[in-house]
Amino acid sequence: MTSIKTADKFIAALGVEAYRVGGSVRDELLGKHPKDADYMVRGVSLATLSNLLPRDRIAVSKLTLRDGQHVGYRVGKPFDIEIVLPRKEISTGPGHGDFKIISDPDITLAEDAQRRDFTFNALYKPVGILYDLGGLVAVAGLHDPVIVDPTGRGLHDLERKLIHTTHPDSFRDDPLRILRALRFVAQGFDLSTDTHLELAEHRNAATGLTGGGNASGTVLTEMSRILMGEYAVKALRLMRDSGVMAILFPELAPMLGFDQSSRYHDLTTDEHTFKALETAVKVDAPLRVRWALLFHDCGKPQVAWKGKDGRKHYYAQPGFDGPWNVDHEVASERYWRYAAERMNADKALREDVATLIRHHMVTWKKRGVVQRVHRMRIQFGDALTKDLLLHRMCDLTGKGSGVDHKHLEQLGEMEYMRVEAQRTRVPATVKDLAIDGEDLKLLGIYGRDIGLVLRAVLDEVACDPSEMKRGRIWQVNRAEALR
Ligand code: CTP
Image (cartoon, rainbow, N blue to C red):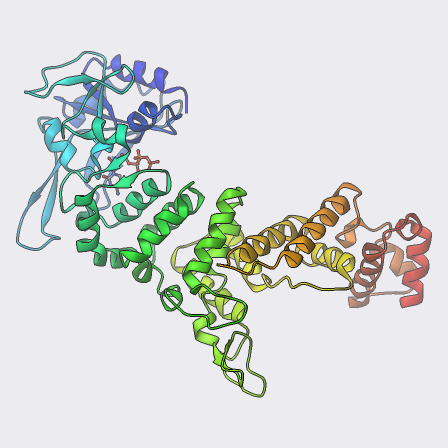
C-alpha cells in the first residue's frame, strides 16, 4: 500500500469524523512499520460514505461480514485500506451465540471499542478534524500523536506490554483471539492476571478453531507468528499449560508430559521439543524448521515399546506388524500431515515440513560423511539439506543434560561441506551434469534407463567431484559403461 500518511490524508479529505484504529495505531506507537490500515468513520451512512469515495481515482469494493452484512468499503488500489462504520454487538437471547452485530453511524467509540479483542487494539487515532467525543478524552499517545483510548487502559497496557481483553467474554466471542493473545506473548507481551483467568475459563472455545475452512487458515497464520516470535517458547508453554495446545493439536496431546525413559533423553517430549525450539529462535531458524521441530517427536508415545533393558524405544519393533509399528519419525510425519490438512497449509510448507520430520534423524557416522552430504543434496536439494542439518542441530541441543558434542561437531562439519559444495557448484541434480538424455540416446540408452543412468552418474560425480569427473568425456564414458 502507499504510505499510511497518504492514506490518512485521503481519509481526512473525506471531511467526516474519522479514526484510524487497530493494529496500525498499535504498531505505530510501538515504533514498528504498520502493515495495513483500518479506518472507522462515524456520523455518516454507508450510502453517504459511498458517495464520498472518489471512484474515478480508487478501486472500491463492498466490505461484508461472514453473514453478508454490509459494514463498510475496501479501498484497493492505490491504498489497500478498509473503512467501516462503528459496530456493536447486542444480545438476542441467553446463549453465547445469541447476538446480533449492529453497524450504525451513531454508535459511540466506547461501544465500538467493546467489540475489539484487546485494549491496545482499541486505540483510535483521529484523522482530520477532532470531533466531540461524547465525554471521551483524546490523550497524547506514547510518543506524541493524539489518541483516543475508550477503555481507559489501552495506552497504559501498550506501554507495559500487558494484554487485557476489552471485556471478559472476548475469548468466548471469538476463539481466534486466544491465538492472537498467545501471538502477542510470543512477541514480548504478558497476559494480565484477569486475561490469564479468562483464558483458562474459555480455553474450550478453542474447539471452534479446529474445523476446516477459512478459520483454519487463520490458525496457521497465528501459529506461524507464534513460532516466529522471540518468545515463542514462552507462548507455547502457556498454550500447553492452559490446555489450548491439546485442544488445537490433538496430535501433540500425547507428547505433553510424556516421560521418554530413554538413555538418550532426560526431558519429557514436550520439554525437549520446547528446548529445541529455544535454539531455533536463537539461531533465527526459518518457519518450516520451527513447525517441524514442534511435531518431530510427537509420534513417540504412539510407537513406544519397552525393550528387555526396561527402556522405551521409538523405532519399529522388530518382528511385529501393524500400521503404527513404525519409526517415530514416520508417525510424527503422519500426525503433522493431519494437522497441516486441518489448517489448510499450503503444499510447499506441508511437504517441506513433512520431509524435515521424516528425515530428522541425521545420525552420527564415523565414515562416509562427505558422501552423505552430497547424497542429501541430491535427495532433498541444497536448501532442505541446510534445514535438515539445522533442525538436527536444534534437536540435539534440546536435552536437559548430556548434549552429544561429537555429534554436534559432525553436523557443523556437514554444514561446512554443504556450503562448500554449493560454492563450488558440486552437481546436485541431473541438470547439473555435463551430459543429458540426448547424449544417452546416442549411446543407445532409452526410456526409464535414461533417468537411472543419469542418476548413477550424478551420484558418482557428486561423491567425488574432481575436475575430471565433472567433465563431459568422463561422464559419457561412465554412462556407456553403466549401460
Ligand atoms: N480484531 C478482533 N478480533 C479478531 C481480529 C481482529 O477484535 N479476532 C480487531 C482488533 O481490534 C484488531 C482489528 O480488529 O486490531 C483489525 O484486525 P486485523 O487487521 O486482523 O488485526 P490487526 O491487529 O490490525 O493486525 P495484526 O493481526 O497484524 O496484528
